[in-house]
Image (cartoon, rainbow, N blue to C red; front, side, top):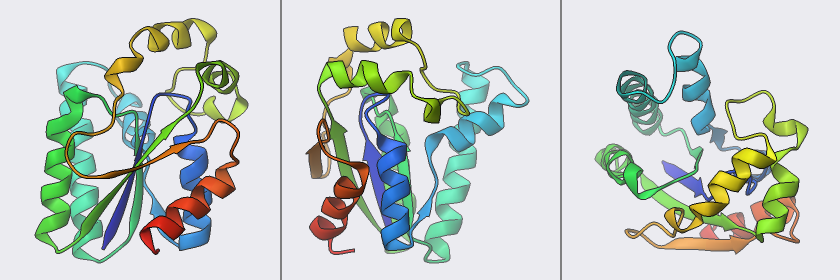
Length: 174
């Protein structure tokens, strides 16, 4: 079982690239907003209880996928504060002889501002305004490359999601 962990700042195109990658690999897409939207249908987000619930749901999904050899793509705006979450995912996948492959997407700041207001972001609990992006840009240094495990880094500023997906597929031999 393989888990492709696509991460990067909000609005960098993680979900868009993941959708294209799912199309060309047959991997199932399990993006972070599925659990966030599920939990937020009952509880307010961004508190200890809802964060714990999101993690527990995600862990169960990863375990079921790994146990049943279902290849996955997961997307997340990873920050250092989520390192324990990621370490647990790696442990779960490893328990079933699976492999976690990292992909970091990045792009020029100006492109983030273009993307944050796109219609594709509206159905999810995501940053959607220029004001929200201003706050994110001020803390861009929090969204660095994951310190454990090697990452394929793709600057997708002028690259289509389809081409990014193809690069990922080729790089990891999927």
